[in-house]
Length: 324
Image (cartoon, rainbow, N blue to C red; front, side, top):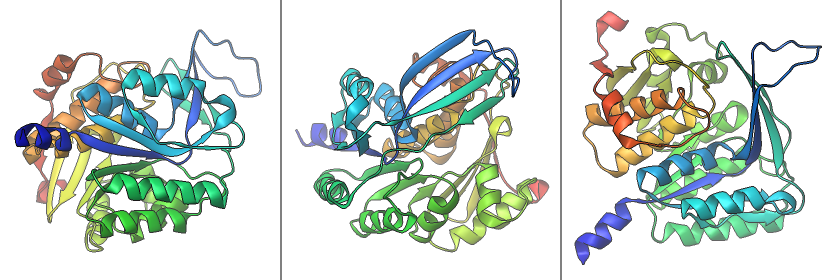
């Protein structure tokens, strides 16, 4: 029985989405600003970075608990998704409607995001959320905190939640941007996953080469962040862990949509760490999972065998002077 319990523990994860969204995605030939645009295909679904991570983790076999703040006036699609995923729903309901984000995907793969403000979170909802976190700390080791912050939640609050989880020995995977990313980094999460643009925004420096990434990331490593993963789109992923760099390069993919690819990478990193994969295998798995994501609309893992096939085609290299 002990082994069964251990296996279950290994698969348990909490995803935190403080500012979820209903994503309205439209595919069109070319976006013309200031004019009329004809959408050829559309999709409307429950999303938000942490929710996307939860969907992928659920497909991979994780036992997922979802939490954060959810507008009570339009929660139906979220409730249905959580039920379909078999996820434990610990979202705190707040007054109003969860925001709608519009994503317009052009045939060349370019994505234009129009992100609306979310609900406003009051002190009572924050207290309920903090109580939920305390309860989830009892039997969960992995926490993924991903996405932007709603009105009422400051970057400092978010950073304090990371500190509290770390103080309880939890592994916090943190994926955000702008002020939330800067405050969260100071709280030394266990893993961060900025992309090259977010890293440049955070550092105030141009990020154009591997050397630029190395310079900024190693400064962050000195702060005590165990894993610094930088996603470079089609160029692959760079990962700093315990002073060692690994780089991955995915095979060339036919891009249908890049929406959710970063969230899929986070889910892959989380799952691979939960399964205690060896480092090279871990990075190739997460990279393959993310590469597959750009070849489909929406997030999820329809066929794990496709991921394994792609994984064999991912190049993994230690980063040495040739990259510098």
